Length: 352
Image (cartoon, rainbow, N blue to C red):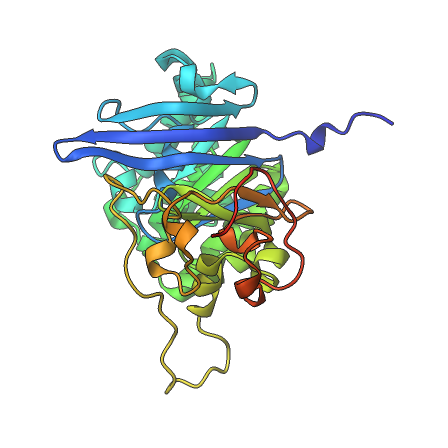
């Protein structure tokens, strides 16, 4: 059988660890993250603010200022290039051409003193040896492609003359100007109203399908995730605690944190007089993270071992992986919390 290159990951992240050196101490923002993304696939990184989603994404593009950021360990292999060891020239070539990023706040992502068309054609000229006039024409076509009306006129306007939704479309235009293989969307709909959110998501999905881009979609909104993701990785306190395909994560979640996030999402037709579920407590301080499971102080099913040792990753089959001591065979007293079928732990350890 012929080798199916479409199944080969475009991006492979292994045991990534990133810290920030601050006056208060070392902030361990990312503490051993591993995942992969293949061409045409969307991976959603989900979790509360401060879980390490954006730091992980920005490390892929080496956008975290170094110092204070420091890549302590791990590998980020992007289209055959080891990003963690790449020099500035290599990263400059990768950014915009191999990987593009849609930022959360379009007003700060765009230069307020430059016309929108100029900001797009600047990216085109950076990676293509073409005339300025041709780059400008391409910029106008891109503005039209991201569904901004009157593209030729809009290209000559400044970001302040655009609405919020139009500015976000402009940021998307900048990020896809050179048709990158990987698109990172960092909470691209957070600052937009619901109607515009749907339009931006539809635009991203249509671009991805047409160009067969891989996409990492970062969000804390599980309602949005359901519309975009093939696979989901749930992050907490700098680690991925559970990951699997979207159907499995939504319908058969295992980790108590994943379950809590899903219970926090309002359901269609839900009685408005009933309070939404909220996970008690707050994420830990990553200057001094817990030595065991970081979620243990907030977990209703916490056992003694959860506070003492980091749970190993357990392979539940079909790409579903979870790090939770409830999956250990010796945790039968609380096995009802996760259902039948615990899988096989990737490391030794046990409940006490």
